[in-house]
Length: 157
Image (cartoon, rainbow, N blue to C red; front, side, top):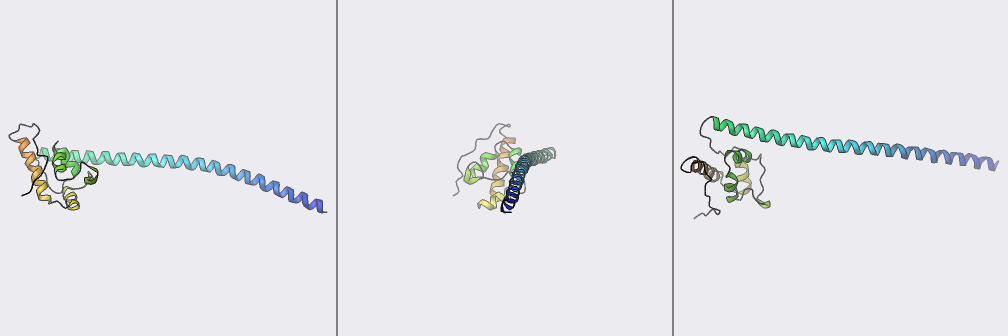
C-alpha cells in the first residue's frame, strides 16, 4: 500500500511540474506581448509629442504671420518665446543678453510667455520688451533689413 501512495505522490508531482512548465511558457508569451505593447505605447507617445511640437510651431508661425499681415508687428509681454524668435532672427541674442536662454542655467521653454520667463528669472518684462521692440525698429528702419549690431553686455548705471 505504501508503494501505491508513493506512485500517486509521484504522479501528482509530475503533474505539478508539467503544469508549472506550461504556466512558465504562457508567462513568457505574455511577457513578449507586454514588451511589444510597451514599445508601441512609447512610440505612440513620441509621435504625439512630435505632433504637439509641430502644432505649437505652426500655430506660432500663423500668429506671427497674422501680426505681420496686420501691419507693423511688435513684441509684447504675452507673446511666447517661440513667437518672439519667429518675429525677428536676432531675438535670441537679445534674450541671451538678459540671461534668458542660451545656456543650461538660463534655459527657457519655447511656449512660455515673455512675461512668465521674466518673472521666473527676476527681470523686468517692460525692459525686455522695450529692447526687443528697439531691435525690431532698428532692423526695419535705418538698417535696411540687415542684422543689427547688438552689444553683448547689458550695463545698467
